[in-house]
Image 1 (spheres, rainbow, N blue to C red):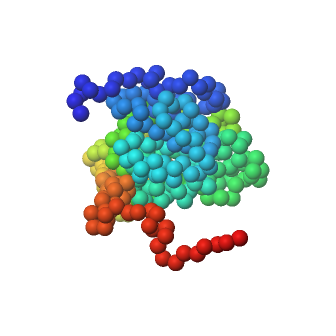
Image 2: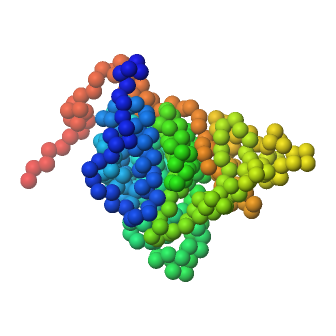
Image 3: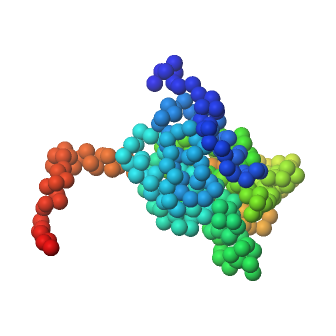
Length: 341
């Protein structure tokens, strides 16, 4: 397409006249702002976008985006989005969901959408709590979480969304934070360009029912010590003075101080295109080890056939051999019965 025919949009073109009904201070506002800004920069006709959501605070997203949208039912956004993408593969289908919506009742739909590599872009808002239903623990709440539904502490080991997505062999897996606006926008652009399932965990604050869930990552004084940026082709280095790094030690990783003969060249060089999902999985687990930071960025970005393309090719091949199907003939084939009152 010639550049002079590309549509020119601004962020305002993707805003609606609907009152945004999230709690003041909610991290969802920052995510909405980032998505509206990025959509305007993609130069894709606005009518090509579809936003699908399930149930939860995040699932109000379609009302606030001046695109096509569908507010579906609890946990079913990946299934509904899959249906839209199969029928209209030319559309840009984005899913807005939360940790409860997508990893509890919607967990089955999430993993199968990812393993099929359907061309959906999933924004998973993770605030580690059920916000819409007023503060129950969620599948990502930490062990021992005291909430309205677990007054003595949760006994459930939480899901790690990134590990789960990589385990399903998603072809694009990334993580960002609601208030890291430039990083979030850059991550969304990379997801938009990916030809296949893109899964982005967005660490989001619920200031009413789980305020400070990601404080160690978001506080300026602590951020540099607790976050490592994953940048393809660059070493894993972090710390206020960039004085710490992560290197391989057999099948494990270790944090080492830089200096005394140890340099960035000795650190692990991030390879998001590594075809072996085990590499990205190891990265997703390091935040649980003592002294390790939380990785932010693109864990995995690999190419694989899209599900919608495979289905279209299969239909074409069968039609070439057998012709177009006849639904009425199919329904009347084989044994039939007539039921009379």
